[in-house]
Amino acid sequence: MQSKIKIARQSGFLYLLLIPFGAFGILYIPAEITVIGDISATLNNIVEKELIFRLSILSALITQLIQILVVLSLYQLFKSVHQKAAQFMVISILIAVPIAMLNELNHYAVLFNLDNSELVSLFLNLHEHGVFIAQLFWGIWLLPMGYLVYKSGFIPKIIGILLIIACFGYFIDSLVFLMGLDIGIIFSDFTFLGEIAITLWLIIIGVKQQS
Image 1 (cartoon, one colour):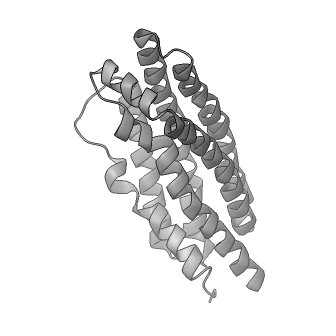
Image 2 (cartoon, helix red, strand yellow):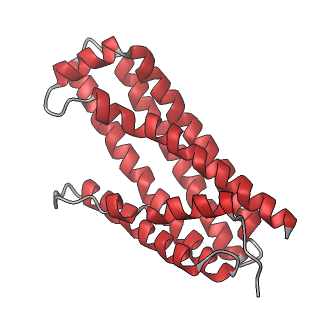
Image 3 (cartoon, helix red, strand yellow):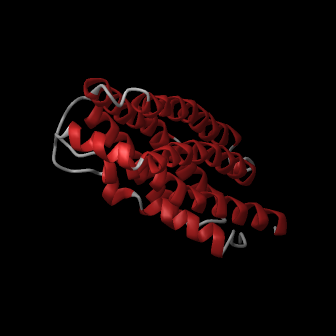
């Protein structure tokens, strides 16, 4: 039990690291540098904040390395619950990681073409699409993870249910974006609670005694 608690807390702390690195590496650029509909303003922001732009790329790459550590740690925690589901969880992340890492080449390409606004616009758009392709698998991995949590007996079932809901939030958002639809709602803005819950539970409680 002590070993399982140690692995659970390790998983929780690693999961927590995804938040700052992921937010800066993946969300910062569209939120703070990209000006929708104004490529000139976007270019000016990139030139003025080139170091920050480069750091965001590095942060995005570190995020993926942490993601590997997270899923491998969770595999150790859950493999005794259902090994095939745990393996599916790992495979989903190992598909997402190279997609996300290779996608950062689009941001590097931006830096090599700052004198060509059309190419910059193209590479930024490609990067955005790449994020949503990776997000398909960031959603999928939460399905087996939610199932494992639900069946584990040492983490509350409600957290497993919330993780499965989060899976469909990410998955639907990606499909909607990649299909070029605009339905006026981002589902993952409302379905992410499972990831917060599992992170806090793993750090604070670890695992509960099974009856």
